[in-house]
Image (tube, rainbow, N blue to C red):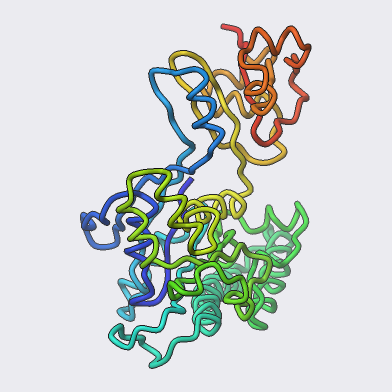
Length: 352
């Protein structure tokens, strides 16, 4: 899953990219290309299961983060930026709320709520241009055999146009299955799921009131202090890290909250596979049946799925072993209709 980190200049995008991926943003390889990094999704259950199994490998779930520069003013570069963003699975706004007089802001003052609205408008304008271009093309199509289909496309595009013109993102427009088919391959930026990260001063990183003014529109909103996160990254001892966070009134790092927020944004959840070779977290969409989760592990498993052996991590950890958990009757066999639950431990049985 690919999430684009976007925002205005000097908002802290590059710093947060480093915190999420553990590496400095590599230089783009060419015009229109953007730095990409892999970030692990911290999960204490992975650590606990790894301690139980002592596997050869331990792997957390991962998200691919793509770092975008501020939207260019140059028309050609702007088109490239927009086209690249259309291919993402989700977006992460980074807006500035920290007050450092030595850091320039293009609008001359710090206002995170205003910057969120500004980004919303930029994406809406990009979508409006796509809608208007498609409507113009349809207006030129005079072939009688396509008249009925053309009218249906015009109707749904007009519906979206009216929403965008009143500053409503496309994702807030309810579309029927029939209307969905009329959109063809159009990809709207304001239809993508989105989260908002507010880069705050270090003294209010744990203050929920810092987010009250942010126009969430149903989005995940996370407050992070890039300054605190940079200091935290320098602390290697887990106990010292926990004490550092506790002193600030924080239960976990901002990077962890961002990663978890990203899962909520994309509608994903973790499930686990365990064994002496590997303990691993995987991501699957919420509401997915067992064969779909099997397909995440290996594409062939979805087609050849027979059944799944399912355990709960808290029950396994309490029992101390799979054998003891089976003795307690807490290992369930599930078929194709089973809907995987967040945190399930799944052993897949698949055919040839």
